Length: 272
Image: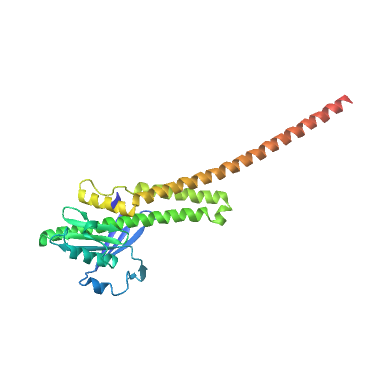
């Protein structure tokens, strides 16, 4: 299942997530938690600074903001604060929010806003735990996108590799291996709806992610790319086979003509 393909390690204020650990497109995503008291001060520094982890620079994929509010549906200040963090402006408005039972949310390519209704300590902890599940779903969506981009790039690289193209059998074998990798990835790792039916709130969250990040659409594009490349390869194979058959036919005709001439010579010698 999907979660057998996931490893999570907590280190201080970070999560280290490893997705698709048994596949050739393993993905690592680092989630860094940061408490922000002053959103204006936060944005005075460099926007979207690279995060340094384990001596490697990890590009910032997205930002998620968790804000508690007594009335998230009408709290203009909380919405502006979250917008300031995500976009560096007050562009996100209350009318842009999606309303759920215990929170309001907003998703786009820049980030995710999660305005949680404040109920008291115990329920707030439950709400924050739900937000953490949203983090996992968001990380999964980006892991899917990164894995599919890697597979698509590998197919394009082989297709336009002049060295591989000069040796048709090598190129075809490399492409078939990539076809197998894509099919295995979809069979083992990719789920159109990775959330259980028993978790309707998370299923709704995944639907919102899908609408905004187009994970399923990218997967469909990857398979269309495979179909198109496969069609091109089949055309090339058919063309080579046709040329070979033509050469064999010409050779067979030549042998027939030579044989006929030989027979004529023999008959002539008999008639002398």
